[in-house]
Length: 289
Image (spheres, rainbow, N blue to C red):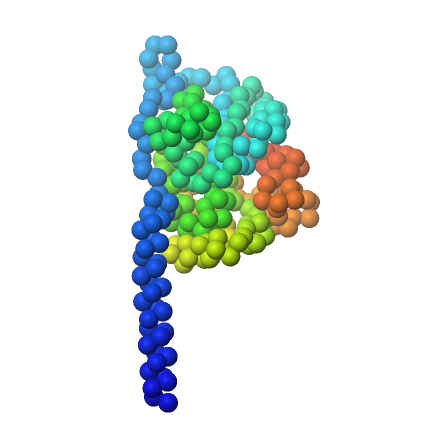
């Protein structure tokens, strides 16, 4: 009996060693994937013909409200489906003044990518050629920048630390240039429904990555909570326009109003109209303060 117990203990001990060793190897292999973005090379944001800096431009140019949206597929589809015109109308109606609005995003972009795309120096030649770089939008010195990011971080099980570090860099660069970030909290999308049926090998990779990053698989909740906590802890809530999911989509993809496409990840026309109306309302309220 003792020999059996000893044998089982040895097997279990060996498995633990193998798992720990394998985990270290994977961590090294995924080091670049799991590491937050490096800081981009600073660039000048919108100078006028006399060479005045962006801060002066922001203070002086109040005739037209300039708003941009950057991020993942939520920003990309906003432009692709033609909703920029609707957002321009909603903002103009809320602000009672002319508005210039434009969005740009890339499907599958993670928070690290959203930050990288803000700097041409961090984009690859292929990304530049595909038009993913959002530096021109930032260089135009918008008054507000709406950020859509996080769903792909959660889908890839990259962990909340990765997410908030990249998001902090995004916010820091915008604030440094006098641009007010509009932070949209991620609603509960059905990542598990979309990715839970992956081939076994891919699913196990996600399991291992989830274990390494200490996150719940395919859940956006931890990411949203970590972002909100970071904004509060670093005193940033008063410097951003924060839009909680409860303001427009508390029930996520299970919302009975049918706000999502069949994949339960991306918004349909009704969903975008509701979100855009909420964003326009929050920006208008912020301008009154």
